[in-house]
Image (tube, rainbow, N blue to C red; front, side, top):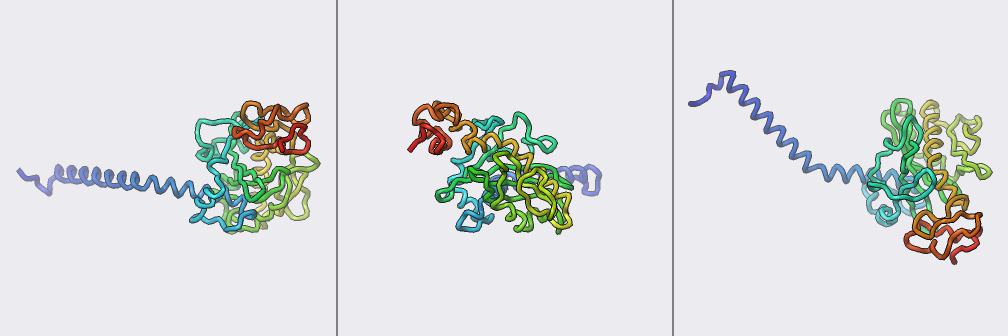
Length: 290
């Protein structure tokens, strides 16, 4: 017996079938696009990370070529975790997959956080790219900053969730702001002092070097200043190890010892593949590798 198309039963059945059909089609579309969406998200993140060393590269990093530049620099093999003692350690997931917001609480690095570290070998120089995250004026802000072993800033990149267009949003939209960090040093007389963001003519918040705040966006600029300082604090033990003030090698048996406390390295172990870097080439290491 045919259903009466004017009946309530027909209307309910028709609506139910249509809803299920649409849901199935949407689920199938989402599943089919999942891989591409993940690829796009990863590519955007790679671009942001690599922008921190853009000033040292011979090509402009774009969304389209970020994956290729990433591969050229062998970044997958140069991604690590750093703990609060400055040691390179293993984690449960690839550091690249970690969301920055899970590493911070109330604008500060969590005590048990393992921080992602990206090492970029550009020519004969090595740069260490670190993750930043904090609170902006209207929502989260984040970014990446690269330094060399002496603490000289090679570059940085910033992004935000909801800063004011034309004002606070310039931390991302105005390349000149990020470029102003290049060449600054995060140390003053050997002590970590970050790079402050302040109004022209004002003293650096943390006593070190400074860059000019964005005109009309003082609050967002203050937030960036705090974010850079608090984020880099978690990396300081590792960064000091690069200057010979911490563990000489970061992982692998035999890669222990501290510079200035007897034998820096126990043997030629700093040249082993298991070591993240061959810091024993430093002049102050008595058993430096040649």
